[in-house]
Length: 128
Image 1 (cartoon, rainbow, N blue to C red):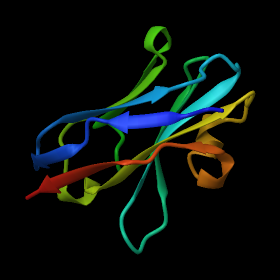
Image 2 (cartoon, rainbow, N blue to C red):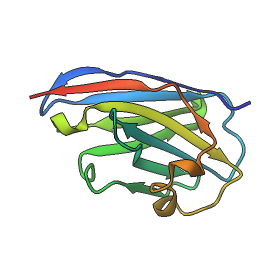
Image 3 (cartoon, rainbow, N blue to C red):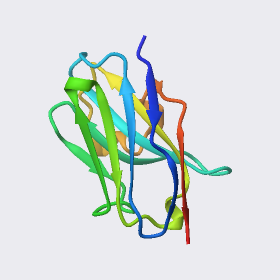
């Protein structure tokens, strides 16, 4: 059973930075895709960034140039470095994973239903 646990959320002022993390219990089923999604109450879950085991990545237009997704195989961890944060980045951020999956990352970022494994979420709040 693949389990994902996020951490690192919190409150920051606009313009600040935050790095959130996700530890994944099973990390060896290549090819795989790992992703960050976010959701605010009353809105659909939206893709933020996706990374593949081969290093490909895709970002939502709203975060390009500000957020960076990365992974550390040694610690089975996924990260999202968020810089120049804006109040509109306020959301619950979820880590998601697929395994034995080689679908394009630019396709998966638009499809949260393409990810069978999810964490419980970590809240990020950006104040103006």
